[in-house]
Image 1 (cartoon, helix red, strand yellow):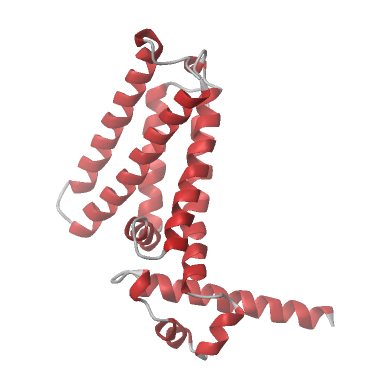
Image 2: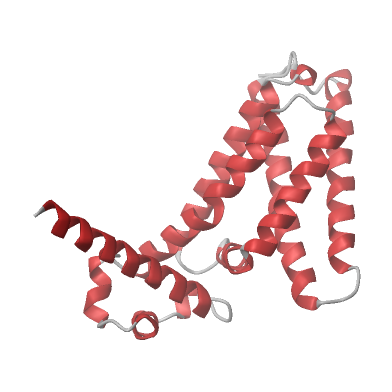
Length: 216
């Protein structure tokens, strides 16, 4: 009996993933609000009613795509920020991680970039929630660094949000550059991202001197 249940569960998970993959492919050229449930189930080869065994609606499927798209990225970036290397080395590795993620998961990045301000509220909220958790984790990593000594929580959080915003913007710009295909476009995006993050890092070093850090 347990073997049969295990086989059924595995098949259910396989179908669920097939629905996610099919939707992601269809979303390359359209928004989630315009994507029909029947389009997705037709791609997978199941009846439309079978969709509801896996998701309540297309919004819930979109939320699952958000988790799939952003879940692994902020774990990797947080690990880099937790290291005690020089700021420039951390910046270079962080941008490299984002660049690699875009090249490996372009459809996920396009989906997040489009739906971040899209028409499906549940998905907008899921993206905002993931980015909020991302900022919390980055803030926790930044707080452990010596340069943050004496900083208040609000200021560390503000700094984390600056980093997160730059990384999200860089990911979207890299995707556009890759799709545009112009020679050197991706390299220019990477170079700009590194300079922007270094500028933030320099400002961070002088924030307390200007009376900004240390406030609660």
